Length: 271
Image (cartoon, rainbow, N blue to C red; front, side):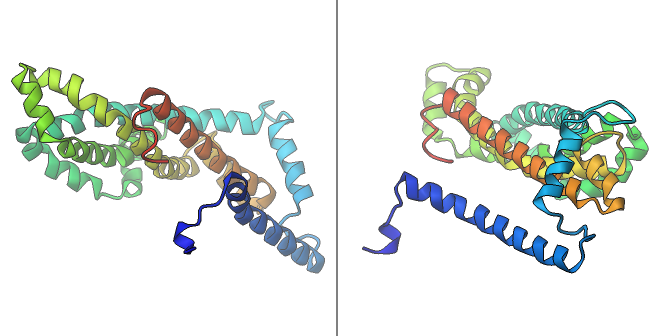
């Protein structure tokens, strides 16, 4: 049988999925042991025991200066900024994307502008946002919104344009107005695609937020990483990076479950 036709069963698929993680962990353990054998004070690749101690310190012990649990406090601050920005981006993209996709006049007016804005590197705007909006929460939320919204708008607009023209004509024949077309024909079909677009936006959204927190913040996962880097505290940095990755994975999984629950007819097409 050709390899292209061989499909692993569930157990084999699980083992194959775990293999890269196990190999990376083994490589890290070996590399850490080798560096610590040469220099016990080495901070680049701390041992798993040292990392575990750092996790206990930031996650389960209150900070001596503030009394806060640092990991919890940083996580809540980051998620508050991230979810606020993604909520704004979703609302704007849904309205503007559907309008551009449905109405030719609006498409001619806004599509070139949105395409141009989507090419602007969001991180290049960060100094401008800090100057105009200050160093508070608004500038951080604005950076994520500016970075994510144009992509969502363009994706939704293209998905609306891809809908079969026959559906629109049939609805118009039955007397549907443009408002009814948007609510009854377009929206139900692009809503699951919007959820998938949000999944693809999680990585860039975290990138923009971490960059903003690293420059001007008093709490947050990105703030903590760049605060302790001056001490070469890899035992804190590595768990924080892993925690950010885990949060992204959990949010992605939650969006998948939401899409499958709300749109079971669409759930089997993408992962």
